[in-house]
Image 1 (cartoon, rainbow, N blue to C red):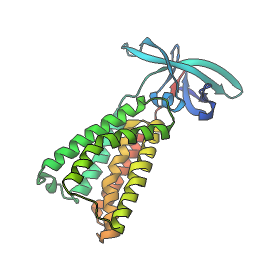
Image 2 (image 1 turned 60 degrees about the horizontal axis):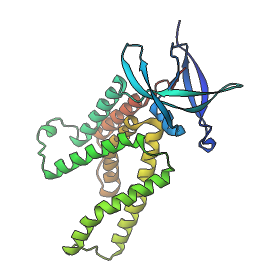
Image 3 (image 1 turned 60 degrees about the vertical axis):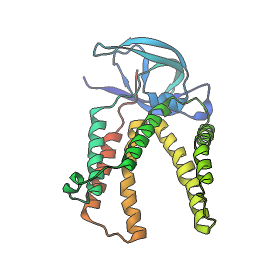
Image 4 (image 1 turned 45 degrees about the vertical axis):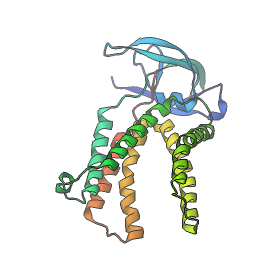
Amino acid sequence: MGLVSGSVLLRNPRFPDLGAVEVDALADTGALHLCIPEQVRVRLQLEAITEKEVTLADGSVRQVPYVGPIEIRFENRVGFAGALVMGDRTSLRQVAGVLISLAGVLAIIARGDPAMLWGLRLNIGDAIISVAVLIWALYSVLLRRRPVVHPLSFLAASMVVGIAVIAPVYAHELWSGRLIVPAAGSALAIAYVSIFPSFLAYLFFNRGVELIGSAATGQYMNVMPLMGAGLAMLFLGEALHLFHVAGLALIVAGILVAGRPPPAAQA
């Protein structure tokens, strides 16, 4: 007997304006409760009622949140229930996708010559970037546990904290005489950074984590070297090479492999 699934709509009756989430739910799995992944809980802003100790099919025992209420619609039937949030676990498919995308990034960095990777020399700037990457990864993971607030409210709070943290550093630069040159280029640069990287990019990234999870969203960070190469072609006259094409193919393939969603719920 094969897997039996059906398309159902899940909705949070406490927040009807959020809309419904359509999932492909597995049936007849032997589960005693509705089980949903973390991304569905975040999208529906479901609050934890308690925690339950559950025994999985492999015999392992875990403490998981029990959330609700959830409105369940299947064809012309409507019901209400709670759900166990099973969380997100990195699958072999996601690991494979990350490795494939990483190969594409390395192909672009090395310009198609693997020997160039052995000649790389790291410095203090590389160490700073490594710390930044670790902090960003932590932010991406903890983003799933943010308070149940409007996305713009959360972004505004993040900006206030960011300003408070960076203000002493900016004050030190002003005190040391490093001033912004009053010119049209400076104004355009500030406008660009304020609108795109500091506002829209964060807003879209946060929403992406809500919809597909931190692991799948993080995959798209691998597109940045490719975008850098594309901008270099556009503004600096760099030529298109075969390693650009190979890198693009590997990065896109990795994103497609890692981004294929598993069944969203079990009943």
